[in-house]
Length: 196
Ligand code: GRF
Image (cartoon, rainbow, N blue to C red):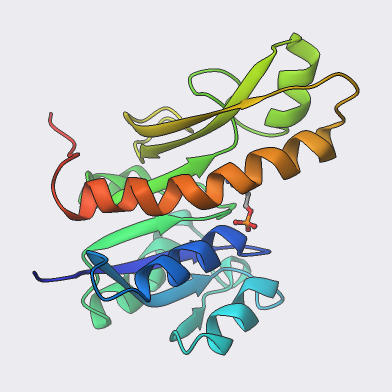
């Protein structure tokens, strides 16, 4: 089995990145995390990655005048590391359509709601405002529409009386850490793929 070479893109905490790194430590896992890229030098996830022995790169979006130029700088790191697949994990940058098209079917994102509900910012607050009794998380292929690409896998999580955005986030985050490694397995082994 050839393990797929995966880069994780982060902007912050990096707990989903850590879950992917942990899963990929197992020899039978079909992917290896070969690179972590952050657009923020101060992202706590960078220290986690370095502690796990994973190469890291920082590409500060503020140094680039266009989205395309930033994406190309990130892409230079991806190509140098011979990356097959990209996993967004709390990566807070929109990408240019050109980049998304080049990597179509090779980029995943995780979002803390049962898509297509509650796309975009503050999904936990959106779920509480809507009064749903079940929320969850979704891993999907990245397409130009924010949080709108084809869904690879989902996990359902109950909303309980008295939930705050923070308590719901914590419950969903635990499910994210189980779901993302499973979804990456599906894509890395070709059991899930983007068509058309
Ligand atoms: C997660 O809830 C993820 O679904 C969302 O941003 C958060 C990132 O958390 N896209 P972490 O950096 O992986 O801890």
